[in-house]
Image 1: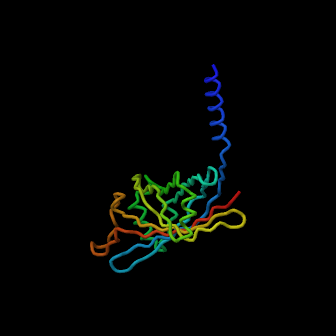
Image 2: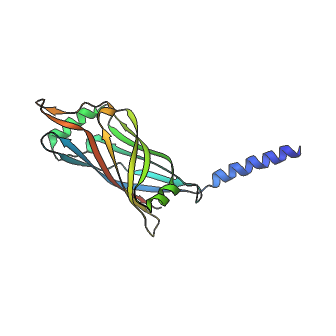
Image 3: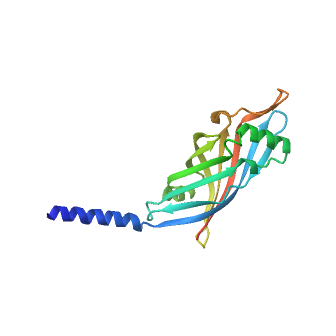
Length: 191
């Protein structure tokens, strides 16, 4: 009987501890730039992610970071109507209208500690045209404002081929490169 009471108390305390864990939900905003190599001339485009949230949960020393960023393909802008149309066709935007970056269970304490010494690697899953690929972003300029808001830059490469995308070409001679360099700035606004 005594061991059953101890077991019940342990379960209640463990469950209550999980419910009382600190979780802060941030409202996120940002901007994205993508740089594309092309046979004759390179170009860049921009995108604004849909409004998103990010959470940091757990106590100091054991904090976890989660964030999902979505970009609507129809809102990506390369400053050229024909190029944007080709890009939407390549992504098959009617069937897969959103590109998603999912950051899950990241050790936030390690990110903060590591950022003091330079760029930090942040693993995530990138979903383009229904195909998921593990990626690693380089995080720089991590800063926490006096109001608790957090800002940072991140960058990573995307292989179009790895996502099963056929690179656009013009007259068979001018071809988009396989690698696209993505850079982004994010701001997580403290509630």
